[in-house]
Structures are given as C-alpha cells and as structure tokens.
Image (cartoon, rainbow, N blue to C red; front, side, top):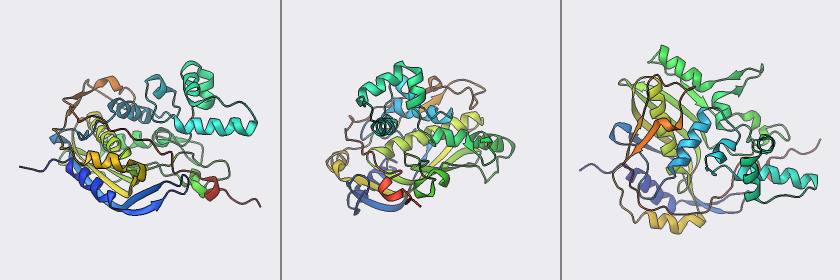
Length: 322
C-alpha cells in the first residue's frame, strides 16, 4: 500500500521539532529550524488539505481570491469573516495614532470599523506591497501596472511549452533596509516565487517559500497553492498535475511544541476532492462560489497563537540619519 502523501508534511514536522535553535530578532521568540526541503502532491490523487488537523478552508478560499483579484485592502476579507490578515494593518494604524498622539481604538473596534465604514477602511485597511498587488499590478519603473499572473495565463495559452512563466512577490524596492526610509513593506513576503509549467498536458506549479511556519502556516500554504494550481488549470482548459512545495527556512515556534507533538500522534485520513464549476472561466470572472471542496473529514483543529514576526524591523533596518 502506498504511503499517504500527508506523511511528507508530518515527517518535516517531526524533523523541524529537532531543528536548530534560533531566535526571531523582532519578537525574541525561539524557533527550531531546518533549511532546504521539498514535498510534492499529485493533484489527480486528491486535494492536499491536510487531515491531521482541520485546515481553515474559508480562509484559504477567500485569501486566494483576494490575491487573484489584485486586492491589498483587508476589507474584502473582513466582510467575509476572514481575519488572518487583521494584525498587520492594525499594527500600522496603531503606530500612526501613537505618533499623532491620538486615541488608539482596540483591535476588535478597529476591525468593526473596517467592516462598517468604507472611508475608514480605505484609509486604514490597506496593506501595501502584498501578494495581490504584486501578482496583478506590480508598479513598473515607468509607472505601468504589470499583471504578472495575467501574462502567465496568456503566455501558456500561446505556448504550452513555455519555461518562463514565473510570478514573483520579491520586490527589493520595498524590502527591509533595501527600501527607502518609510517605504519598507510591513509584512514579510514569505511565499515569494512560483512557476507554472505544463507537463504531460497537465498544469503543474512549484512554489518557493523562503520562510515557513510549519505548524500554523504550511498546511494553509499547501492548500492555497494547490488551489491556485487547480484554478489555473481550469482557466487554461487543462487538468491539474503536480504541486511542488520547495522551502528555504522551515521553522517551528517554541510555543507551538505541544501542539506539534499532539498532531504527530494522529493518522492521516483520505484527502478530499475539489471541483470548479462553470465554463469559460478567466482570472477576471473567477469567484470563490465556483469552488467545491468535497469529502473533507479531518481530525479536530489544534489551536495555536500566531506570532506576528518578520518583515521590516526598525531596530535592524532603519537607515541612520545622514
């Protein structure tokens, strides 16, 4: 009997548990880390929503649509009760209010106001230089908005043997101390490059993720980019092939250790299937309601606290005054 493909993830989880001890400079939180790993999923054999703990499907689906539609304001997510990106705009808002000497509302009140006040959301819900912006409207040096993903679809439609169809989110102009003062992106771009390739008539996708939280983030990332592969296959009128997930730094936060140990006691269940309903689907008309996840029966969720780490750190990345 073939080994369940989820064991690729569980084996990495176990290896990372014994990884090198390091400390995140922004938070002081200890991590356990390994470097340079890869897992692969044949999407004809089921959709890789991990089953040893429940993965947040609504978050996967709406976040990917948020990216695909080129959005960078969290209002769409808030309106769909997805709160995985709330912390970053709130952190920016809080710093802005404190600098102005103004009263800072609590996070719950901030998110409620994003939902109810369009003008407030426009001013405070934006997360600049995030994936949707970079995928669909990368600002070129001459002022043009470059649609990287739209170009990929067009290129593969014209030439199914193309080897050049990559999308990058790594823009040094806005990253760390490479950015001008005040222009550094406030969110760390983690899943920073993917390539689409057609092999044996099927659409395959390889993701390079330079930094990965293996317990909280990676199950979500696997589902998100597997879904992206299926969506692109549908748009291109082909079957999905393989999703390949390549990692740079793969780490586990110290405060997730007991949760990881619990997950490692569980046996994987059968992967669900996924379909996309409709014909003549494009990047422009794709909607989350077209996607149907069928037969997902995971073990219960395992809760853990998100560590808001990485990205611009003023102590490390601020340029000295001249």
